[in-house]
Length: 484
Image (cartoon, rainbow, N blue to C red; front, side, top):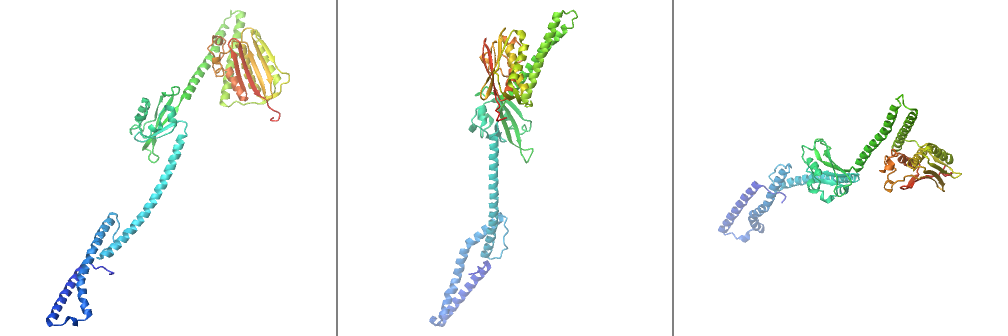
């Protein structure tokens, strides 16, 4: 059957079948009453009887089989209504309406499936991009020199780099997903980070605390917390960034700067006080000539000491700032060393010190900054005179090798203790020995000498014995004629 009739057609068909059945029964009865032999009826006529009888049965069977289709049609209409899919207009043909609605439903589902697939593809691409971006961000945070911790809005740790374990000795696995009081044993850190778990307080400025880790008491760690604002909404906070930084070097630098200022102030104040005191004595008109001469000499010595201090400070500051200009030139080493040594020897004649210079006859000309190296040698020779014993000896000897010129400055003075030898080249360092403190000085001469030797790519070494003297050895590289 190409078409399934509707309910009204079905009722009409049943009524017609019943009517035909009654008529057949009536005719058959009339035939029997009339005495007509049934065998006389044609074969076609005889076949019509069961056909007419089977029509109601066939319709009943078809109606029973179409019941599930009607229920499916009802469910399909409900599904289309729920999914906001428009239905076809009813034609009172169950099968036709079902097929039309089913076709529209399948078409709409197919469109939505394609759209959903595209959205899933975009979501997968976005997820991959976010994963890549997060990996790059985490990689950048891992490479930072400081320890970094990221907390979400609830205060739970969502990221931490490996440097945090080195600073405060906490295992990373115990931090991820935990709140500060669950992984941190330092009350100051817990109190600081707990502030950033409350929304109303997180808009305030960042704060920091300093702690000394129990597993490494020699360092000081600064902990600073910063609110993280959303890139799309400036008023929305998406977490907290916590930075753990080792500030031990900064503390040492601040302490060294304070000590430097104190040393400079003291070293400048001492000669100025002496100059002021002796300058006042010169105002006395009855001052004897001997005291007058003595006062003038003292003022001259202190002024020279003050000038040396200022000169050394300026030279060191220029070297450390990298602003000093190195004027390398070929220097006749014999004449240079002879002139430098004689200058110091003349100034130390009154001390009773013996001066000895040992120079090979034909030293080569080498590349160096004559003025700077003169300052270094002058500081070393002056210290050899200052810290020598009465009637001691100061000597400068030179040795030439295939690659180096070795300068040796030795004295027979008070010497330097072994515990102080590692620090004598530091600025303002002076030993606690009474012999040292009584002879004055500002602790910059050896520091400046080492800086100048380093600028010449040379090396300086010290050997000293208490009561026997000190030996400073300077190694300078020779400049080959080929390189020149």
